[in-house]
Length: 297
Image 1: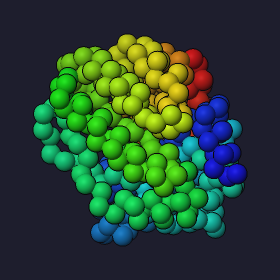
Image 2: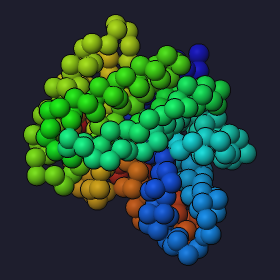
Image 3: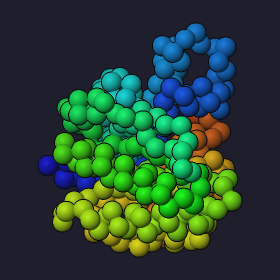
Image 4: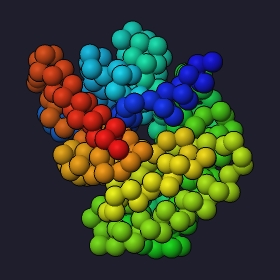
């Protein structure tokens, strides 16, 4: 019953998905943006303690609730820790009405053929079993497209769907993230190839199967609109991808049926030095703006 309620929230919820899944490589940058320099911690253990404290502070802010935030993507260590006196995923769903997801990829391979594929995930089955036990609803995994390469984009999407089927086997909903780098000259061409490739792989899924898609905000408004209507797509979410929050929100509002799944743009303006009142005011205003852009279409 809980999974059915979570699925209903994701399909029809009037809000966006928060990305709180910065991992080892991106954590120092996320902390620096939060006003915590690398000199403030000694080693990975302290670093992860500090990033968890930031995430827990966000998750416990008054406006971070299921009215406007329908889902949240967690890093593995976040799933294994507590928020508000409960395991993180259970706290989000039971206390906040927010559907929890888990980042499962292990990072990216070196660039080849215009793309960066996912590294192998040798412990995926065990990780999925832990996620199910922790009341997580779905997963997220990221690949990157750096050029309008037909073979490269096919390799990215094929790998994502192959791993996605393994995740589906555990009763989890995979968020398939094929990020197009926002600075490449042939971004629009890459997005055209990605759209057709995603359609092909979605059409090949068995009837009744559902996945989610996480995509870069496109050059042409509503470029991915057909995917929001596909029977195999539970929801399409957008990453901010390096755009400022204002630019990401502007682009998002032009894409009907697509909602935000922002990371850096969500935490922009937050600081470890802020009082609770200042912090809660800043994150509340950010949530309002991202929510407004998500429902604009």
